[in-house]
Image (tube, rainbow, N blue to C red; front, side, top):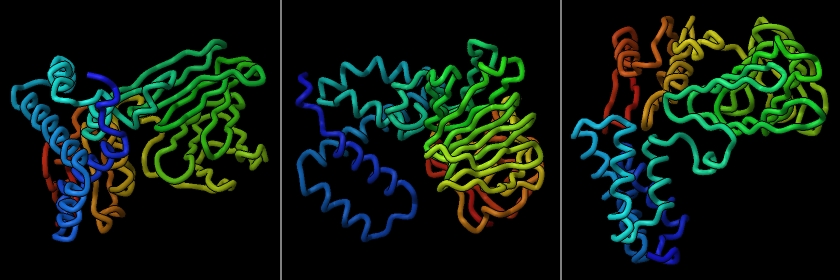
Length: 318
């Protein structure tokens, strides 16, 4: 099959958005009418919707047959030639895997130096001795700028330990919000949510805005958020670096914060209603068993779990 027979990416993405909307449980009659109009507006829209449904059926079939996540991917890859005979382009396969959480993040992550998927962590040691741990669903490039190793964090979360590195080998971390310079230190950086979140566990970190302006130094004793050229305190109820040990350790953390920490360890979508976001949680939850973590939360708080599919779970007020 020639590449020109592939469906345009914009149509593929629109079909995925419609699929998520209709499966969310929030779609009303107006949504369904708009979807029908979208289907009828272009024959390619209907083809994209049909092929998306075919992949969903295949994923569900593989799950029912007892395949794990890796086996499911292998199962899908074995069927790829057959899908192409039906006119399914490879780009749609990647986007659908992204949509159901079998491949973390957006497709551009596939071009990064280091990428972790759902439930995966990775450890690196840089020349000079700095150690870096990537959390699940993280995308990272390693650059060289001005003699210092530079880590470009595109998405997700990392823990950096530069205690063993000489001053010239201390790393810098770049995000879209600015630059963080290690000053003999151990610290955590996250780009999930608005701005860049920083927690210093040991030593100091010099913080700069995107234009290079120095905003100050962050030290142990609290979290920080860098956003819109400003550095401000940002409290967290989670133990920094707990995920490195495979746990979410909450000490009066908000439920929203706990669920966002669990989400990269589940295939699919995990969400919550706004009215439960600020409920306080204390406990230790194993990242290797997020189902058990969610069950424990549902038993200890006035919430319940709504399951649309295995890959769609929402925490709502009881």
